[in-house]
Length: 285
Image 1: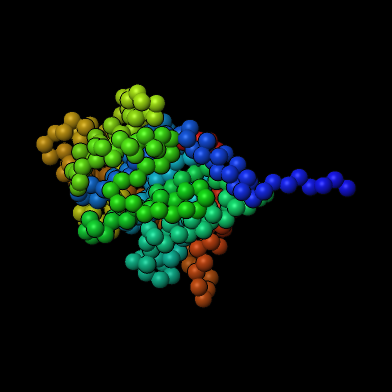
Image 2 (image 1 turned 180 degrees about the vertical axis):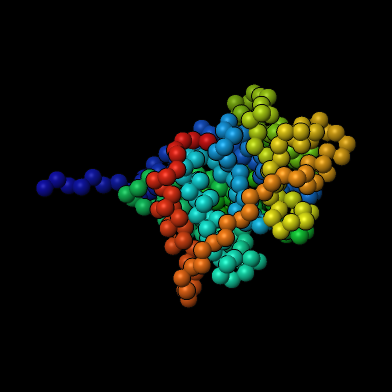
């Protein structure tokens, strides 16, 4: 009988972390930062349909970097968890912190399982408050670590270089146009010391607009809205945020869940991941 091959727990965790970090480093970065009217999301994304930035709930946005099929499963699971919690209790009980903790538990369990591959994904969960000091931004890493940020956070790609650029250029309480231009300039830092020009056609941009009249604060910025912000046209910030007849998909009405004494976020997320694992396309984004 052969002796089983032994790998120390320390080496196993190091190998898994190196594997995930190497793959995440190949994808484009995502920047999430505060501006005077809410929270701005900016990402480089070559796809027009496979989004890195999405809405989770009324005031909560989601950004991710890594393998698309894996973070898309996480996004859908988060939407189901938020809808179920809001349905069972109250919409005010759905928070970015609660979702970040649920994601952290799930990703931590997946990362520590010896038999499977860890998820190649980093997440940002952000919630806009009624006042700037109530805004919340959380980064959830592949191993289940959760960190809260104020001002800005960067995930994916050359995150260290982009963060270093923002440390030097990010102003306090910027307008939307200034925040956008600052984020795009920081994304041009590729990490090798040579800045590059970011292709504006490949940008995916969205905001959580604090002053939006609707309960749902998430909006995508497209076309002329972005162009006017880059050109720093007078009134561009207000024009980009004002309602323009854009259609928004109505939130799905969740099916009434079976009566439970307590809602377990991990059970809901695991169920959603099982439902979607075989249906989603794969690939880095």
